[in-house]
Length: 353
Ligand SMILES: [Zn+2]
Image (cartoon, rainbow, N blue to C red; front, side, top):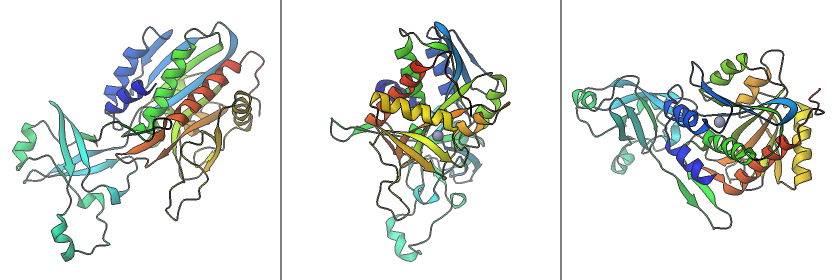
């Protein structure tokens, strides 16, 4: 699973420009599922039939990542940008970025004042993103255009994958773990189910544009007819020393079974089934109540006549930054719980309220 996660985080898919991820997944899934297609928005939808009767279960994770989009090229070659998804302006200066240009990827950075100037500035001042600029080493507008950068070019973080920490308890540090970690969990579950007997049918939805308002899932679900759904996404832990942290969710303490966030009060029957499955199988879990986050679980649950939906959250530090962090153990717990949940479903399973 880690090798797949590494590959996925090295792909670039800012909101609306998920093409690299979409077509990587389509190619990977062909031959491993009964049917796979890309819908008009770029969502990847795959179906895998079990060998006995049972419910149709949607499993979803999003494939987009937070990024930026170029909105103006200055005469001196510096680039102004707008945000794609939620960013903290305080962490933007001096970060390395990658621009998805017409002729390929271009390295750059978000500019920052040299430290020598700080004594002439207000040290507590935070410059909003509209005051900042991306520098790609070009000194004129025409240089920028020659490199294949134009208004509308999208930008992602320029950081790469690392495994850190003691070998018995490693952490992944990378960009876009939100939500390539969820995608990797779904692919690993699919892999492990290849030779297993399971009931019903699994519908995999790898959704675009989650970070700008659950747009891909909202659209795709309109054409899907399922009995229940599980969304897999990262969630922000609260185990670091900042005063806003309430220490209710910690890295490495097991998969998060969501109870509530701002997009969803999780369907009690599904939540209880997940908790029971975790207990029965000895899988570490934490119950998550965090109104600071929403997921595609919210979009899916309220579609059609309503779909009982649960969410498994992969605990994450530093979400939406270039150095997001998840624990390998939590990833495994999430994968193990999702797999055990699928294996317990049968014709008798009730998702009734
Ligand atoms: Zn996410």
